Image (cartoon, rainbow, N blue to C red; front, side, top):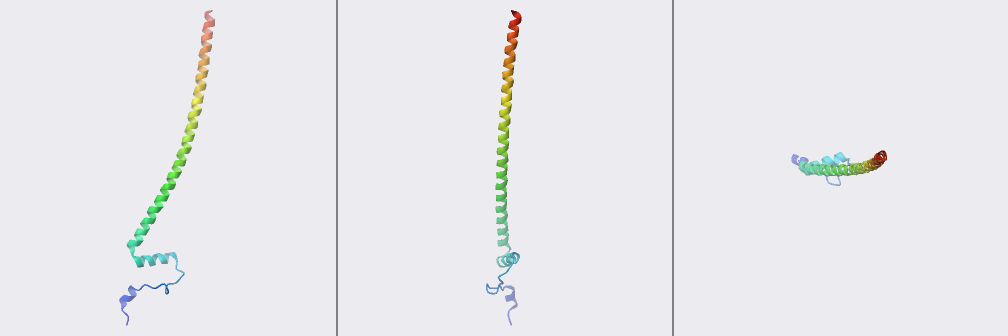
Length: 107
């Protein structure tokens, strides 16, 4: 008569295992064979790797958006600088016209 404990600790060999095991079956087999701690470490490693990749994507998107905003800001500064230069030129021309008008009235 076989020992009942042997059934609990029995692991099928590669010959006895079916070849068409699903991912869930394989996961539970690894969990059963290597234990919960190993499976937990693998899940934690995958989660850390996933978070690292996600944060890299977010950083790239942020840098792209930041570069676009910087470009728009530079264009805005250039446009406002050109507008202020035009106001300065107009003010100088107006001042010159006022001087000539005052000179004309004195004569």
